[in-house]
Length: 85
Image (cartoon, one colour):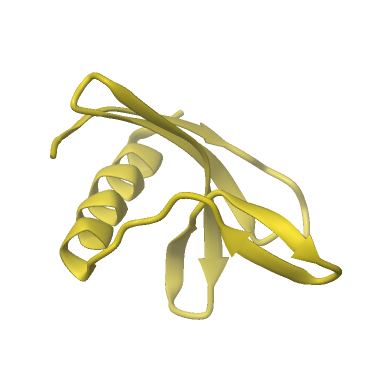
């Protein structure tokens, strides 16, 4: 699997932990939208697309299955975020 495209939109909202949103294209054939870029205590991290399943409870609807794939997503998306205008 290869991430063939990454699009990032920075979000500047005072008091918000969300710093941006990303969309990726996998192997030029599968898109994943609404990956959130959040500021945490240890720096930026990704939150995968999710849906609300109960009040205050959310479940990811798309996510990496293993640590290697998660690391690949983080590297590509956070690099694109740092280079976005």
